[in-house]
Length: 101
Image 1 (cartoon, rainbow, N blue to C red):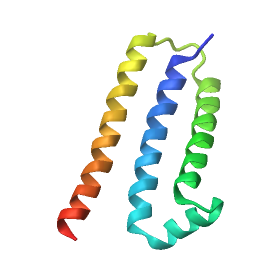
Image 2 (cartoon, one colour):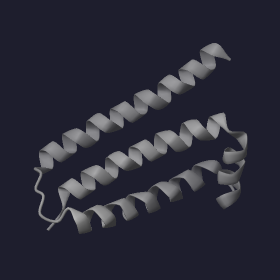
Image 3 (cartoon, rainbow, N blue to C red):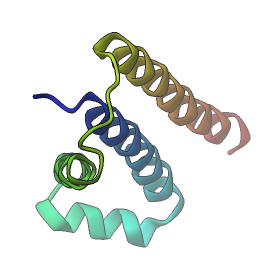
């Protein structure tokens, strides 16, 4: 049985991680270089970290949240809302960086 609550929480935490990795790597050159040196390219490193984090988050939450039920459609709506919020956060950061610097 699919644990939609675990999938939803894992997705939301992964969105937060993506926003953090994107913004922090732009603010901290050393962090950006370390990520890039991990695989040879910044985006590939962020992608690998993101996939691993999602899997780990899902496994952890599926262990602890076994009996919680959430409807699939509610899960999809929550994921869409947080994906849009993540997009707005990253876009706003780059817009701010472009206009201010």
